[in-house]
Image 1 (cartoon, rainbow, N blue to C red):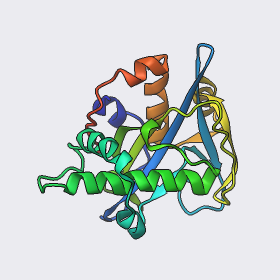
Image 2 (cartoon, rainbow, N blue to C red):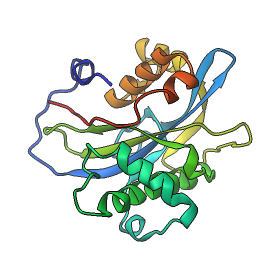
Image 3 (cartoon, rainbow, N blue to C red):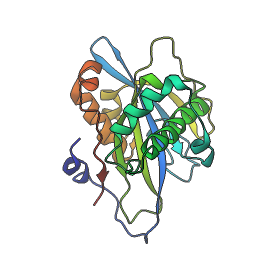
Image 4 (cartoon, helix red, strand yellow):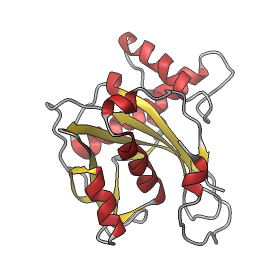
Length: 220
């Protein structure tokens, strides 16, 4: 992903003092309908204190319990793959075994958030490390967010069961980007950037063929 392209996007004036970035996970559920890519997005409630009214992917902050969660032995090869994918991020570590533990914590965060917000239990094997975007200094809230690309089958039918969103559904990426362009919906910079990058790939096959090692993008 092109960090220069992301940092060239318009953003609000950065006026807040330094705050630490909190770790979070966000899951981009994507499917292909004919030749069109669709993603599952939520319309955030306008009463929320973060991203109020914005169209977002399911996700949220890491909880202490996520670090204590233990996946079964069948998931260990997946965690090893994820550790490789996140090796350049803050989840990477030179301490033996720590990168796998960090990847386990973040995978649990992503899976838990999706289940809490949509009722769907995604399988670890369809979760792919995709992007790591870090909010620049100057915002009142900062996140070190780990984005997963998930490719659920047709049997997966998420529903909007969270009070954080007023509605949620599958939409074509092009329709979301158009809605933002004509000011009908609000997109945060990371969401818009990731959607534009995904739609440019054109197909799920092309997306999954990308290098699985994620390079962090830090807003400057």
